[in-house]
Length: 346
Image (cartoon, rainbow, N blue to C red; front, top):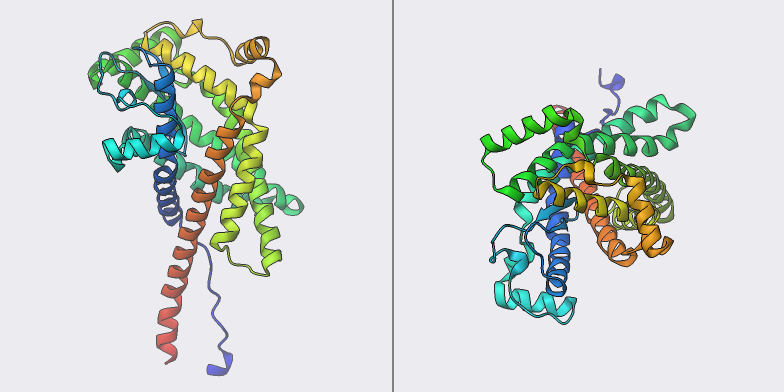
């Protein structure tokens, strides 16, 4: 009998639940690293141009952008805290010294309620779709990350978009859940169910091309680094570098869509905060035309360096943590399969 035995075949697959845990860990770690940069940026913005009631600003926790509405009569809000800052570094030092370390993560918990589920859906769907598409696409299997990244982003953005709109409404008017339900019902009756996905178009215009390019370049870069270092293991260095480079390329190429999306997001947020009809707001094309008319084509590439500084490390931290989590679960699964076999052989 022993002569007929062969080495056991051990699958390196991990379950969707394990993928979700790995992406959740990556999402939380990314937000903890990246949020302080945006908190300092917002405090500097508020110092130059104090935020009036109903004014909206974009808050990024490294995972997704959120619209924040300046609260009515709230002079103690974190973005209105007193302090004069001379530079970004000076702001970091003074905020920590006067308000404590936790002030660098001001406003983070409410945004994680949206950002973490969106990231979990996105990364888990990508892995599942990519694996399925590689099998079905045959000779075109190398292009699977391009398609899987785009589809996964459409899915996660479509699920989260109505929830983000509801969060903005709750924040702007401090409504109870019963009042909010009535507000949403009346909006749906007046403008239809699609009103819950208002603002989704500009988001998809930026995020779908970004995701398609990001995953395609990431997988290509990772393969190249595997060959360069003569390894088949996704080490921290390989995943971090591939994530940072692919994120940088995608962020540069989609920058005009990011400028338009941010402008449109703020417009919609302020209209919702003032309870005005969203029909006043311009279409994506109109916003782009207005930016070009006011600032020239260079206006579509405004904020190039800040976006790059924010996106590159966020992509690198997220993907390297995610890959580390997957490697951990892969080894855990292999050990669980091999342990009984080793015991029976002995």
